[in-house]
Image (cartoon, rainbow, N blue to C red; front, side, top):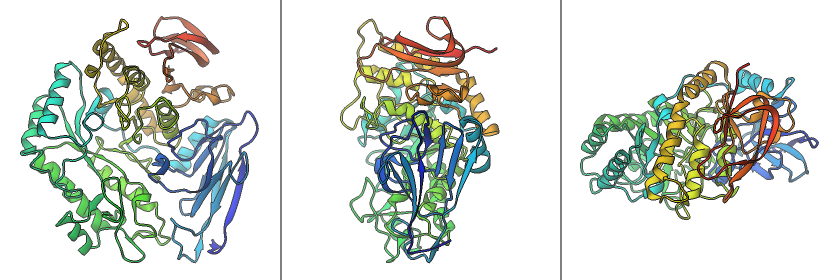
Length: 542
């Protein structure tokens, strides 16, 4: 423990030319490996800014060394800013941490193993933890269909039923239909707006008759004026307060100071929220929920939380995810801190319909590996094609995004194949159905890897170095990934590209497209990959 007026700084060299680093925060610009990232005096909590929905205090390098900092430290990080080629850990009692504390803790653990694979597995077993069970298998096998990217907030009963009918008519399978934003009478009411959904129970039943399960988008906020629920929350102390006793905060569906965040560190507040959600399922026949937000930054500045003496602001994050996970293995969340043991899907935060590193298609692969190597192997990629905040994805982007998604655990559509035209010898519906089926063909392997994650703490989608852990070239590969230790996927992630270089690590590899056998380690230069082709390789058993 250190007296509160001190700032403690400890810097780690990021090393020489061949040393690579993994872990650290999820970021909008999700570079991989992470040693080139620049962060300046960065408060290390989950936050909306920079898509920092995961902020585990864990770093791993290619030599087999890991560093883990204690949960309680009021941690800031500085990378390549104060000191070039260094990662600095800074602890100080400044916002967003509790500035009134007298002392703070600064502890960290260093682990050393013979290679990064062994080091990571030790970190999982000793510190990070692993999922307590396998999530819903149908969500892995067949696509989720969401209203969000295609319709945004313009949804109602007829939109939902027409969308569902289109999915069936175009002969696509499903795991469930997700009703996304703007169904409530006001945010936090957890009550359907009858002008949009006159009889939600009937709508849900119609969807079920068509062969869908139904899930619903949920958030942890109540907007000011959304009464009687807001009033009830204020009167009973169910919202996070700042040190002035105010619950005022803001999220993307409110104005400044016009919302409150349910305080999941208080059992009575959690019970209020969870019991209302349970009743909603009971009343409507809906199967489960997609839980949005949760990041610590949505609280009022300088929050008072009930559950810890040191008032660590990230506690709300951990407790929110723990509470909503009680709804079972169909649940999806998008944020977490020390929530690796939950038996639920961790959704990648919204991706943008871009080809760039600014939260675009290349970051789909790097975010997948980033989550896996922070101990979250049950990954749900976000919408195929991205969210279209600046316009719908092009046909090329949609197909390449779908291909990149094939060997990830789950597929999620909102933009749809039948909105695109045939051409260049491609029948768009047939091609998309082919890749959906290819994903389902590997469901046994995906589920087997879920079980290995639960039993042994292994990543479901590791980086290519996982099976060749001392290979310096493999340590640098950012645009390929593995499914377990059996499949290597090398999707095309650049616009206009019809070939790509592919690195195969040690082993015998069967080309999934043409049946050729290659022996790694090996570069395949200019591997042909026209728009209809997803390059992938299956490792041959010895």
